[in-house]
Length: 456
Ligand code: GBH
Image (cartoon, rainbow, N blue to C red; front, side):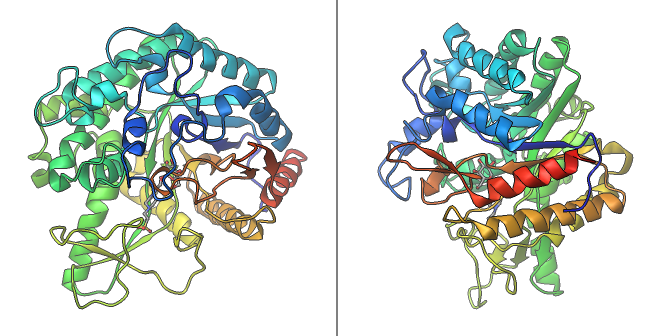
């Protein structure tokens, strides 16, 4: 592996809904994912995340795995429904106690805690619209959810802010908007297509309000974890390049421009958003200390064309014909078990395109997620994936990209949302019958690489 700067931040990532389990303990309320997984047919293998890796009870063992791995940082998420069980104003101190213990255990192990405040587990009371709801539905479709989120962020910062330095507001608002509200493949399972756009704006507003809340508590290192990947046009035809550009607008620029430039990338889209959008953009576009990018793969996009061969579905679902674009299969690259193409050089391309588009408005970048789904404990494919992506990252840095850290998704196998337990992203294998943790070959590989980096 090429040599990275001495102070480069190495980490691994997880999220609460995917690893914690213990959904009825410590006064936790229901989440939108609890409700969604309980509906028949929503999760491919019929599973749910009531136990998953049981991290809530086994976190000491998991912290020991982090320490042994040799990472400097651990990105986890705080479960909003543990802290605010009914989505209202009551803070559940017992819920915060868990993260208090986790943070102390991490610090004792020499691992920096990097909490994400929201990784898709909206309190179900808010999602159902029980509070301030309307017939149009609740959750992030409501502006009030952004305000509730900021109040929750304040409560977490009040408890953990004396020991936590680095904060992340949201995880991938683009994916929650598209998959959760637009296409219905993720919780809350709504299929609103373009009527999902308010959920994007309200998440971005929630981000901005949470930044204000964290700053008021003295935070000096705040980022967001946005999903990004290059969009490639299926052909140089006008129809395909326009379709690809629109896809890129919706999945990349719609979420990066407001945060980094304080404006929406398109007047037409902005006019579809509710509320005092111009004022909101001042809140959304406040300076960040760093910008987190979750990178998985590029997307090849063409115009909708029923006759086109090699149409890809989007993470398992066919896109409805109302949408003016269609992902296509990317040929000529290896694939993960998820079917996603392995294209490390697209990470270099992505980072350089960000530098190009955002220039001085782009703070230092951290790769907050990168990883792959493969079976098996002798996971040589995962080693090749990580090695390739770290080389691509290094190449981007050599070409001038200011990247300060890299987090692998994920520390261990976990509940992969609508896929259930069928996809394994971990450096550590989980036996779901016994909950035994077994480090994979990729864990040993990364451990050796980090030791090597530390030797300088
Ligand atoms: C992340 O999201 C999540 O943050 C994390 O919770 C999750 O476990 C992890 O990734 C693995 O899925 O067009 O069909 O090729 C996923 C980010 C970006 C992945 C868009 C799917 C499109 C797939 N997603 N990508 S496709």
